[in-house]
Length: 296
Ligand code: C5P
Image (cartoon, rainbow, N blue to C red; front, side, top):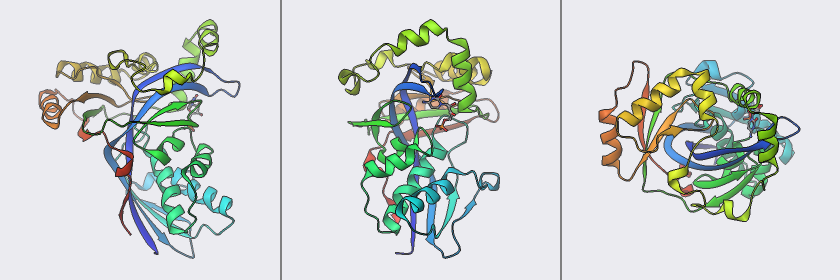
């Protein structure tokens, strides 16, 4: 096998709670992640002159791209040359709260694990992923998972494949670091301390449904709406179109709602008064098994 093409899925955060702030500045989260059927496509080709990266959006093909870092980190851990060319076809918007860059990095780890015949377990790949970015360990697993810590604790839970999701991106991005730092600035020390004293991951919180679906929310949403007013406008538009439980994904800027069927999701999309420059996708929630190679 000298080449491999894989789909790297986006995610939504069905709920996201910030439990506290660690000494190193990272926030401790309790979040239910779910992969959805919106994909970047990654081709990995063995190449003695690697690693190289090309991308459908050339502005993302710089040395700081997480997909390239993933190849370097895995090669270092395996004690071998990072002899691979990576081509990335982007469909997931960046700065969107959909985890595109993290998913690309995780897909490079799982893809090279195959291409290089390493046969490493997911746990080991997730550990390498944690050094690349907080969301990378989740994408090594995919499907549905409750996330703890800054993202390094991944507890897979039964997925909700079969349900549908309307994603609405208002055409502007936001930096995750900027949203978290504004959140920290706007939170009182007491709030963060009080939440930190709560158990970080209780056994109960790893059971899906512990937070009833009607109470799912995103603690970062108010601050993101203040920083990027379009997020609030997009939420209003989704709710006005009948999107039940509409909320933001991750640190924004994408907002979403769930629907029981594709027809119901299409109905929301049809009623949506989208402003120019907004993007809408109707996608299924996906199982972990969906993250398989497109072809060898
Ligand atoms: O880990 P990652 O590089 O994706 O995170 C980007 C930034 O978001 C971090 O530098 C940090 O400021 C913030 N962050 C955080 N708590 C998390 C995840 C990210 O404060 N759990």
